Image (cartoon, rainbow, N blue to C red; front, side, top):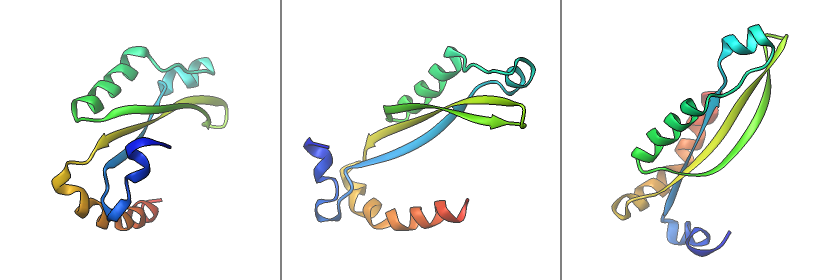
Length: 107
C-alpha cells in the first residue's frame, strides 16, 4: 500500500473505513437452472446505494458457494472504502477493537 493509506494508523487516527458486502445471484434461478447469475441492474443498484453514502468500491471478488447441496451459487464480495471525517477519526480508531469483537460474536 502507498500514499495516505500507509499513514492511516499514525497516531491512532483512522483516515479510512471499509465495508464488505456480498451480492448473491437469484436463489430461484440457482435452484431451477443449476446455475445463477447476478443481474447487472442489481449489482449496479447495490454499488450506487453505497456510493450515495460516500463509499467507493475498491475490490470485488466472485465466490462460488454450494447452495442446497445440489447447485452452486455465485456471490460477489465487494469491498468499499470511504474517508472518515476528520472530526471522527480518533473516536473511530479507538472503537475498532470493539467492532472486531462484535463481528466475531455475530458469527
